[in-house]
Amino acid sequence: MDKIVIDVTNPLDFSKDMLPKLAISHTDSAGETVQRLLPDAKVIKTLNIVGTPHMVHPEFPCGPPTCL
Image (tube, rainbow, N blue to C red; front, side):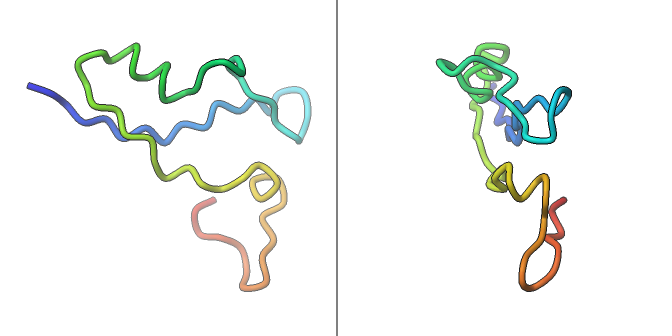
């Protein structure tokens, strides 16, 4: 039976700087990596729409986002 996997990963590396870098190569994505690890699943990439500038400094006119 096929399984659906909701992939919300953001492969970012904050270890060296407050401005993150991709933790994987520029020729692959986290969704593709997860799909290879789970070949029988249907991987759905979603819920990771917050850009890196807002992850570091989450300041918005209406207040901080609730997703962080």
